[in-house]
Length: 108
Length: 115
Image (cartoon, rainbow over all chains, first blue to last red; front, top):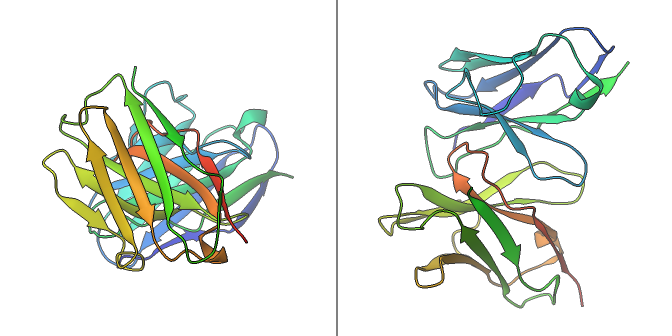
């Protein structure tokens, strides 16, 4: 089973600042990685798939990069609505298609 | 527009079987995708449970495979999750979704395991 390690667990950021979230895989997942945003009481929302492709309707301030075992989600200028928990998920090796433990982005 | 909606009992007794259904509209289950279940215990992260492919193949998480069955009803365009011998550790919000890594998820259904 592939383990995804997300860091940091919590990221304190001021509105307007840049946020960089990391996801590391225990073995290569090529580019088969997605990023989700989840707000309290809501289902996860897809932001990025294929490691770097923005999903439909996702603002350009969200960008994904990486391949193999190291991945990054960058939010270029945090807006109030971006404070949430972010999960990465690999869908290269299965079962299972594992999720990371999440990074909570909170207001500094 | 693809939409998914979970339904089923919100309360299940320990040792019984949890049964949920996902109703899909806007896309046939015979299309070239995976359709799966994911859960989220209270205050915790997401856990992938399993899925099936339009070809009929099913795939389960190794940690749950002895208790999980995912099936589909093409006539109703629905798919179901059965999780047997539940305990309090199975208390979670259960989501159905089109996979992998898509924007098509149900809103989730809270299932509590308690006597």
